Image (tube, rainbow, N blue to C red):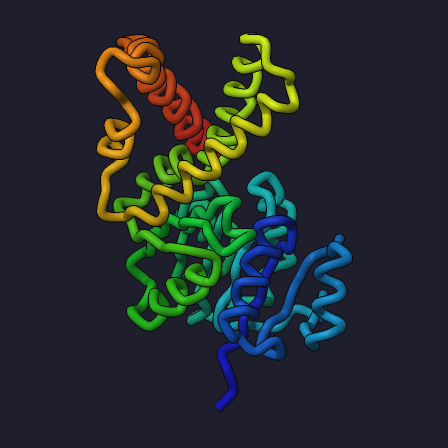
Length: 267
């Protein structure tokens, strides 16, 4: 029995990460078609070595994964119609593009909106996903299997929750990387050589993330308290970060701005 057909539309950073995850997970290369007008050298090499169909004439697929930039949907949609049958599953990772918006532009009924994040590139991503009422149990299992190729998957509802997922985990890696920048800049301001300050900041965030990963039974609050001696240096810093106008308030404002922008992109 032939493996269900899978069409990937868009093979930029996230699309290529998904593709790599599927191949590692054992999805048959000859079941995948990749539609990308400007494929990277890596994608072209994969296609040549494994027999992936790269930019073939569009034919209906069982599952279509849409990984283009949200701003490109309007222009790209007419050319994507031949990829769909009435029973095709659409998995969209387009930030802000709602089920209603997608169904207006594409002949898709069963739609999963998903928001992975960039650690997907190393198989350590996390994806929030929402399925509309037309998605069957079998199609949801298919979506879960495909999205799990790059990390954990969390299903959410109602649909608007995807904007919050985008704000927290979808955009979240950039917040963490900026934290590293800020810590390094602060270290340099205290007199450390800038390259040393960056090494210290990077290693601290890398190690702390790995400690979180290896301690799923321990809350982040407990891990924080384990570092903090009453009246010590860490407490002095946390008194600033945990003030009423500190990091929690700043993060609330930042994620609200990201969620608001996700909603604006739905138009």
